[in-house]
Length: 118
Image: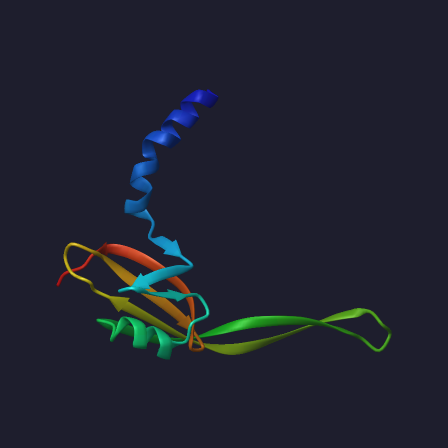
């Protein structure tokens, strides 16, 4: 049973990249590297203008623990707005699309998707 599961997992492994986008902590733009934590300004300077930009604001719950007057921990929760920018670079029909996601102006994730159109 265990060998059958392992064999099935290994047989399906090459197809995983077709279903899920690849994620990275650093990518090349030409000869330069962009990495998580970089600003939008730096990414634009290294990679150029994106082919597509999607902007949105998400509300997120942030929790903190403080000490009450009697010393017991008290959970304080509040909602904060997070600016999300998703930049897509279309590098041509022979290369994968690159998608960079920024939160409040800082790069938080990079992924590749299907092949470009240009």
